[in-house]
Image (cartoon, rainbow over all chains, first blue to last red; front, side):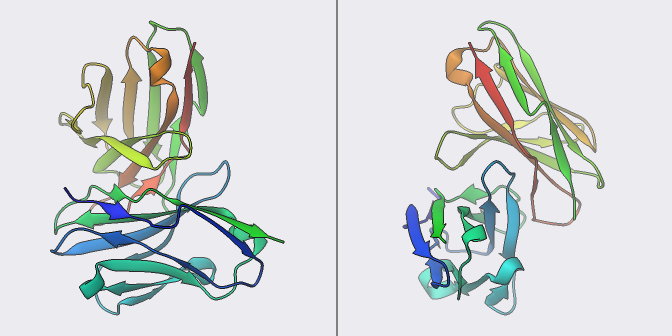
Length: 114
Length: 115
C-alpha cells in the first residue's frame, strides 16, 4: 500500500537552530509533493509544493524542501527557526498523474523554545 | 489565496441524532472536495472524495450510510453524520480543489462532540 512516512514525531529546537523534517513516500511513479503547516487552533496552510522541475523548492516563511527521487524523499528545511514556527507539519503526496487524493504523513510536532 | 470555510466550527449533539457540516469554497469553484477526519495528535484520514453532481467515493472502512456526503454545487459540500455516537466525536476537516490543480485548500475544521 502507498504510504508516507515522517520519522520525526516530535522535535524540540531552540530559536535560531536549523530544522530538517524527513518525509519519505512509497510510490515509484509520478508524484506531487506538499508540505502543510497547522498552527495551534488554525487550519492547514500550504508551505510549499513540488510538481516538476527544479527539485529544490522554496516556500513561504523561509522554508524549503528538496525532492530526491532516488531516495523517495521530500525533506523540509529551514536554516533558522523562530518561536512562531511552533506548529504541526504534515507531508502529503498525490501518487500518480491525475490523482488528486492526498496521502498524508503522520505529522511532526515542532516546538521552538524562545 | 483560495478560501474554504466550514460551518459550524463546533457542534455538540446527543447520541442518536444527526448533524450536518457545511464546507464552502468562497472565492473559487471547487470541482472536487474532500472530507477528512483527524483524531487527537494524529494525521488526517481521508474519508471520502466528493465531486460536484455525482456520488461521493468513500475510502475503505468508511460507512457511506453513516457519513452522507452531498456536493450539490461547485461551492458547497455537506457531510451529515447520521445517528451519531460518542465514537464519532472527532475533528472533521474539508478541503477543496479547483479545476486543473492538485493543490488542496483546507477549511478550518469542525469539532464534533457526541454526548
